[in-house]
Length: 450
Image (cartoon, rainbow, N blue to C red; front, side, top):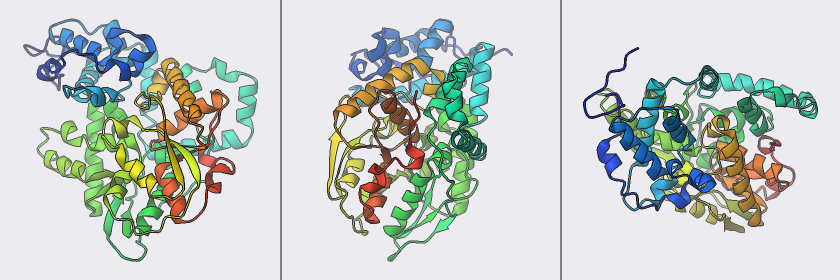
């Protein structure tokens, strides 16, 4: 297939190339370097945001999109820590998204890489398929087969990405069900929608259950449409833009039919992607305005709770917690104070921040599957900082972070129970006490060894 090139776009085609104007916004000051995970690991200029922007400019000037260039773009976690650090407000998120879209169309990867990506994207964005995997994973874990496979070292013969997927998989408990509509308790303050998610819904259903209970307790009916599908986050972050747009349109249609305005999200990566729908669907006459409305009314659960006056009584949870700022919550959505406010409304909680909290844990969607070596190193770095807090519980707001950090904590011999922010709020409202988290790990949160 011949890909046409437009004048002035160099090696990029005319379909959503990175903007030269946005590229030129970067003044190469270097403020992003100390917060970029890959630069912290390797000290390589081309593996920093400003280095990758230099490569984008080179491609706009006609430099070929070759193996070396693609490697540096693939190394990027897309964590957006550079957005928080940049004094020039460079829109790196739009630049790396557009560049990855160009790579996806133009660069011919080795067949093994193409096969791996095809397998992953035939699975993760599809909740029904993940539920089937959940059944087999539970059987694999409960039958003792997992212990046998690990004892015999059979995983050493599996491809690296399969070893990573097996190692970070949480222990699977019984499946739970989220009703399509849940009624508010007491005073009714309105209705909200709930994104149940792909990985969240399949592997961390207790987070969705806790979200529904808290929203009901705060006076909101919750609508969780069946067959709502994927938000498109993983596809968008890896340059599969056509696929991402298809998922986004379907999700907008689904919640419009459900008749809700506000859509609540409890997964940082999903919420970040949904708030970017106006950019993803820019120029689409049928969806652009609808995408803007949808994005304005998408709220992370902590963001939503921080904006309302709490009605449900919070009972004490006497515990020291380490709070992890998920990158796509703290950097991409700029939601940092709200989770701390929500946690601070719970009596007895003592919150300890994690040193170098702006550095990614290495999960980054499917980055830990595509790039297992740097992801493992970043996970162990994060786990070491978590352990130094002396906290009894790690709190995070993204399923990928939960799996990545729990696995790394176990690998370094300092295991900790891990919970979602909303699970603590739920336990406080229901007066469950800290035993709900400390008397043995909840089933869905037990880490597996790396």
